[in-house]
Amino acid sequence: MAAGVRNLPGVRPGARIFLFAEEEEDGVATRIENFDADWLAIAAPGAGELEAPRRDGDLVELELPVPGGSLFLVGTLTGRRTSGVPQLVIRIEEVGADPGVGTSSEARRHFRQPLWLPARHLAFTRAGRGGTVQWHDAGAIVRDVSSGGASLFADAEIPLGSTVRLDCPVPLEPFGLVAMGTVVGSRQTGSHRRPRWVVSVRFDDLDRQDMSWLTNQLHRYQWLTRWRQR
Image (cartoon, rainbow, N blue to C red; front, side, top):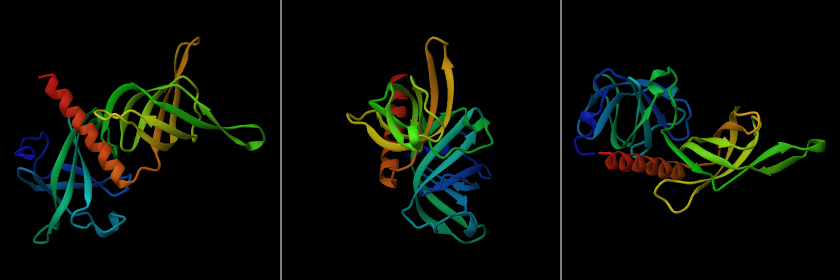
């Protein structure tokens, strides 16, 4: 990242930061101890705060709350420091911003990129007669997407808890991301004549490789968008 880490807003010793690793959805709160051009050293969480031991080479994500938003940093664990405060040293490889998150006390697991693109295909389950589960198709616009899920602007009511099969467009790629997920939020909007629903979907089946690929694509897209706006 060249000299990028030193120039990032909010990066300072003692700053609160959230660590995510593997498939964990909840971030572990810790703090920045030290940093340089392309790495951060953070206070190592206690053994009981992580579900699995951290190994050198593991992919990790960090969320750094800043005024008006958050920075999302993706990197790999490259070492540990045991003198004084135990620390994890992380080489930073990708950086993205997510406006508005830093004003919340809740850390979000994944960097989110606004898109507003039509979904290639959307299907969802709904209970039918006799308790049978039926699949239904719906049209939708993908409002934003992350490696953790997507927000959709749908033309059909999709109940909470429904299973969703989504073929989602991915920036800078000719093909989409096909994923299964669960509806974790749904609210009606639009007019009485033309109702629409804002639907939040949590991805359930993305493996680490797919999550890393999608996160990198979203960060590339954001960088390209900013470069074009210069």
